[in-house]
Length: 243
Ligand code: PGA
Image (cartoon, rainbow, N blue to C red; front, side, top):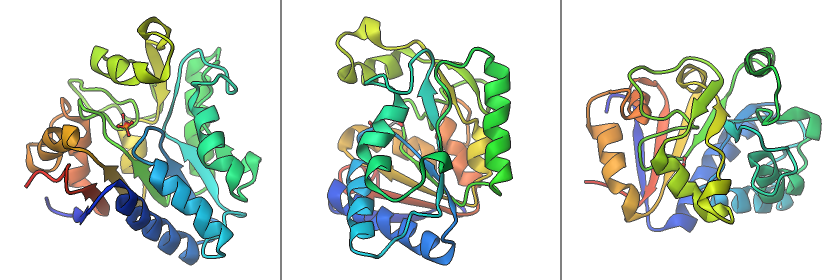
């Protein structure tokens, strides 16, 4: 717990508002900032709040660039369950960000290596991620970096764990439709972000949150590496707060 700032909010809506404060602060200081975005249920109140704040004139996304953490392998950008589609529907179509300034790993990439390298190169060309948003999986994954024997460096292909496939089946017609593989920023990509905000809600995340920030740094709990990042803000609700 060297560098992590922890904010405990009452409920998921308040988590969204507090996380939006962090985005507002970073983007008002750097209007062409680079934000790292995440999918999942937890960021939804934040995305609703960001849309509202731009409508109220408090944030301006017209110069902002965004890079998403991950994408399912094999899903086209317009597939209803693709993360590109999720981002368009829940945030990007509702703010002034320019489509060419948003990137998500390409689910249909034929040359995986080239796609992953181009993804890293684009982020680097933009000057790196100023603010990276993260959720956390029940197995401690960030992006789709699953428990492993090491911390993977850069954007790469991963095989999803049964736990992740099971957690994500709620979005698909059946568990057999959930892709078994994905592309994700690496732990190195995530750790290179200048600032990280992690949002966590619900009592089912309490145990993994305890392991992440109050346990040893261990690639079997990928998010635990965040203990070594110099600027992490953890925003969780009371139900998820482990202490
Ligand atoms: P969730 O997903 O916000 O839907 O719980 C988090 C994650 O798997 O990273």
